[in-house]
Image (cartoon, rainbow over all chains, first blue to last red):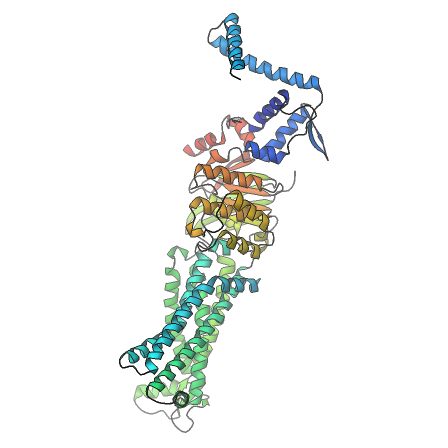
Length: 123
Length: 273
Length: 233
């Protein structure tokens, strides 16, 4: 994962963890890897990981059971909402970039359809 | 902890000291074989080499101890030594104790090798070695012999303690910008001062050994001043001729002073560069 | 908020008239990794040496887990100096034995694990190893002590970039959660993601300090960029 050192790292990790859950890499009810393992994997300080996970807890996407550990929520609605929120952010970025290039909605939609198909074919 | 430190000293110097001792003993014995067999010319050269090796053994060992002290306390290995959870004075004590034991062993070895030289020489002139040595030693007056032995022993102790102390003082914050030059300068100054102090002690401390005359070899309760003044004036002294033994006391006093000073310096002024 | 494990007040040290630390004050909590940063002449190494108890003749107060620098503090502090401090003739096993003998909190098994993690040869002496390998061995030893405070002086300088990553990994992996770990370095970029907070030293005093993410937020830049800005002036 590429981290941007000029912005708070913990916030970037929160987004990364939300993406993991939204995309199903961390499935509903799945137990998260321990803080230390995540820290090593990402090459960051465990305290930073801890802070990010606490925030993810606060967003309701994970719950911490003191003895058993941290688990992804089973609340499908919440996960879908997170997916939608992240997707919206990505879409908004694309739209503002397309605007910046002076594209119309039709042009933009056609581009997305073509590139999507290309992506599917190459898999 | 001091025990572990001393054991560690032994462990790290084992190879160097053992190697040096081995080489010197080997050289000496080979030379002495040549001398005892009375091989012309080579025998004589061999004897000289052997005597040199025997005498040089102790200073060589002292040199090895000094280099080790400097490197492990103030060289880059000092960062390990000074990070150990032990008091500075314990470090100093451990190194000095190990140094004293090693120096004493070296002195004994030197004496043993010198006796071997004497024995070889005796054999080469067809004399019985044991009788030759005994007759040689009998030449020295009793008191003098004792005095010399004690003086040399105290001198050895003094060298180990003062050597370590001077290195530590030289490495303290005030002087360490001079590098190894600091203990060298300190050594020269100490030598000058100690020579002067010893001379004065010899003259004034009221204990000496009579030489010549009926009481030769006995201890007398006077210093060397009268003898010295008489000799300077060019005639015999009123009483017996005396060699002052005050130097023994100055050796001990100096050793104590430097031991305390060295220990304190390591404890309070260690400043690694 | 727990109490600080390292407290320095008005620390002053001069080398023959030339000041290195001018009334430096610092207070650090345990359970974090602190980046100690500064250019040459900022007093970084002097500070670490005083904390490690290998440099005397200073004024002020220094407290490491409530002890002044001395045998008691050295029991709890693991110091990794900039230079090589082991005998050239040592092989990894010899150094491990040495540490085992003199440090009660030394974990031999962990040390062996780290030597393997770094891929160091057991049969080569230090004299025959590269600088990077020697550094890795020394780090293995320093991090295998179960200390309360770790002081690492430039652990990744003079080491190739690939080794730097491995070394930082090794440090992260073996960091005890309730300890304080201080890394002094001028390679800020490499430690950006590893430090909890930073202390910038300049001219023998603390110039700037704070939590890493807070500083990123406040200045809108990476710590590396912030460092350059601070020291350019």
